[in-house]
Image 1: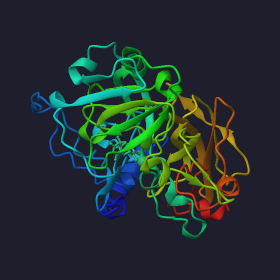
Image 2: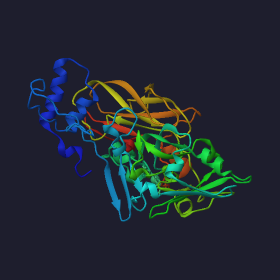
Image 3: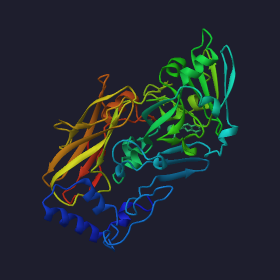
Image 4: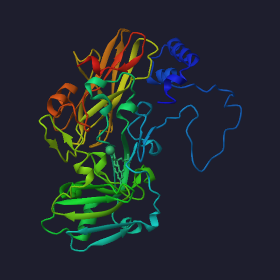
Length: 421
Ligand SMILES: Nc1nc2c(c(=O)[nH]1)N[C@H]1C(S)=C(S)[C@@H](COP(=O)(O)O)O[C@H]1N2
Ligand SMILES: [Mo]
């Protein structure tokens, strides 16, 4: 984090926030800690009731003191950017803060010229332009997309981090309202032939990302998404159209989609053989682990916040599962000895992120806080030890183990999993 919060720490802002709330006798909110820790609060120079305000504009902008940023990483052709989970509210990720993962950059595609070919084991192979896709019945749904490599930064026993934020650890996760046409509608239009059981989805980027998806999923809730949070899908998210597979690993949700081939077997592409498989302890590997298992993370308090005072604080975070709805999130404020049910903040949508909250009266002593999620199948988010036992330590994807934060008596918060194992 080059321009990380630590660097912007303002002692003046800290004192203002801490004394301001204490004097007014209010419960401190996470915003007091955010302001105290992260941001230089711009000074109020004029009384806004004494001068006319700004006029209207065609496109709005963020308040100067609220400038959340993605965290960008580029490695040769491969790049990613991470959503600032600790800076956001509710569950929807503003589109310009949606995480990105590109294997060979973002292609510039002219929507009017883009074509999607649907062929293979079908009655009528067809080419769809965007104007064609828009004539079919439209659907919208809110769901998360998560890269299966998310959270890998806290899995290796010998490299357990302490100074890592929710964004750095789990920022390859975002939630949007997606709009488009159900893939089942298009597959009915071309007529899937008997015996077909898989599709291949292929992207029109320099990576030519290609993944096989079982036909059941394609016919169930998969979507050809051309809208994101009320506007056209962003170039970074796959403009003009991407495959959306609610609850499944991000990689299979092919962006800049140009081809769907219906077949009776998986194609065994580069991206599902050399990568996106999970090596197991016994030397074999698990392939096609599509569904993202239940997971949660406390986003406040978390590194790099500093709690200005003991007393009442509201712990909050996000929980999600690719298997349906989150039914329960428990929070422990004593290192996992006892657990309490957190409040789930509506809406609680299937295959979407849910915000949870838990009021905590911090006595000012060193402690460890953590969360664990349960989904509607009864699956409980495992400990890292349980994941190591089941999968070994050499796996690069699907790290959904419980996350913990160490709160020190000086109010500083660091990632604390190392102490639990
Ligand atoms: N065509 C294409 N599709 C792609 C990728 C890509 O590089 N090319 N990256 C995949 C990966 S690894 C992930 S995690 C998701 C990320 O989606 P996002 O960038 O919209 O967040 O897109 C997937 N679809
Ligand atoms: Mo990914």
